[in-house]
Each structure stands twice: as C-alpha cells, then as structure tokens.
Image (cartoon, rainbow, N blue to C red; front, side):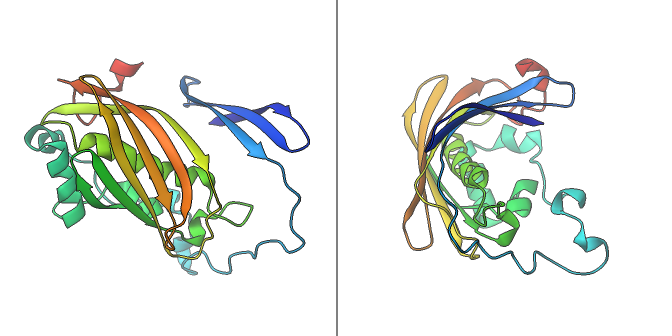
Length: 231
C-alpha cells in the first residue's frame, strides 16, 4: 500500500511524500516527489480505445492472471556470473522473469558495468493524464541500473538496490514504440555501487535521467528469498 501526503504546494510547485508498506504495515520504502502544476490544455488526451482482448476472462487485468515467466533458481546464480545470466536473458537461453511479461521490459544489451533495457510504450501503461505513468519510466531506469550492477558481480553474489532518484525531462506518449534505458556503473566498490541511467524515446530524445546505488552482498543467497536478513 502506498500512502501519499502533500507536504507543500505553491502556485506552480508541489512537494509530496509517500510511505509504502506491506500487508502487515511494515515499511518497505519511502519516497518524495516534486511536481510542476500546469493548466490543463483545452483538448484532453484521447481515451485508449482498446486495452486488450475482448472476450471471457481475458478481460481480467494482467495482475489477475496466472504469472508467466520464471524466477531463476538459486542453482543458476550459484553457477553463473551476473554477466553470464544477463547474456542468457538476452539470448533467450534463460526464461524472462514475470515482470517482463507484465510491462514488456527486456534486456537488449549488456557488458561489464553496463546494461540496456527496452520497453514498448503501450496503452496498458497509460496514466490518468494520458501518458505513460512516470513510475513505469522509473522502473525501466531502475532495471537498467540494477542489472548494470549485476554484470559486475561474480558467481554466488547477491546485490540489492537501495535508492533511486529520477528526474523527468518530457512525457512519454503511449504510441507503442520502444523506450530505452541505458544503465552504467559509475563507481564499484567492495560493498557498494553507484549507477546512472538515461531513458530515451524511439526518436532518441531524452525522457529521464536517474541515479541510484546498490549493496553488494558476497555470500548471500543471490535470489534474496531469505528476506528475514533485511527485516
């Protein structure tokens, strides 16, 4: 559950914060957002005409359907480096995770310290404002940065992103064309990594920039299924 509250609003700017909790009320994440307040244009964005199949239970939202894809078994992380796993996801040797089926984001290129993700800007991702929801853009940037860190970790090493900051440059129309995020590791220490990403449109225009950091966790289960270590 995300609970957002307004911190301050002026004529043109507003600041808000959010606390994200799980079903037990435990805090998962905290965030802040600064928004520009603008007058709506005379013509509002069109309502998407068709968001998917039109028969039977296929009308259910994707989150209501059985999950597709696979979470990689710990044996994969224990036998392959982070870069080898990324190569397997790119070539199709490894099955994509459920998130890729949900929003369409897939890795398309990777090398040590660098990872590129692409995602179609479909109408499934449209916000009430008629553009792709900014959080989806942030998710794409986060994927590219987290996996850029992954390309630097050896066999049997976990990593965990701990923060994310995104600056939005322009909105993304839900036109079905690819949005691309290129993540790079700008610093890799023994236990921490700092990353940066640029998100660009199909026309090569900058959509957003992002920065983040991750923990490197040698000797931890790479799949992080033992969440008690973070409680």
